[in-house]
Length: 151
Image 1 (cartoon, helix red, strand yellow):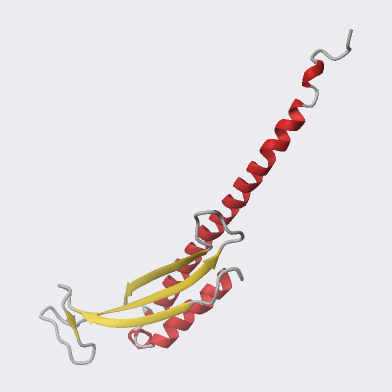
Image 2 (image 1 turned 120 degrees about the horizontal axis):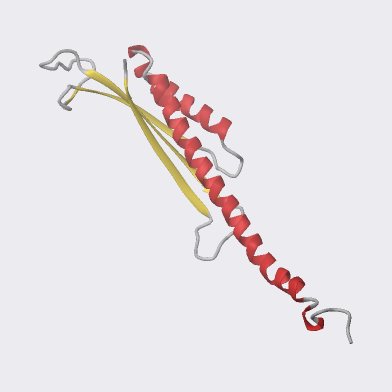
């Protein structure tokens, strides 16, 4: 009689591990890529907010569109990994009345008083995945816009 209780099942666990390990590895890599895209999207949003916050500091900085764009790009380059291509940032400012009517920032007047100044920064980056997945694009365009009212 054999000393093993089930002699025909000796290598069963090893075969099961060999069959499931590649699937688990693919799931792990996919999860890592998803987390990287999610983090990069948060970093792009934070960069847009940083650029808008720079412009919303004062009336003087609200007209500095290039400074707002540079603040956004600086923040984006600090937060993102090399898998994300160079960013594009576009900053604008506009004036509007309390009812939403847009007016000129230099000559515009509102019935309720001084026009409100708003700054807006849009940042755009392209993210590259680690590996190509069937049916999934290898690049993801990340685009975020932040708008703030100048205080």
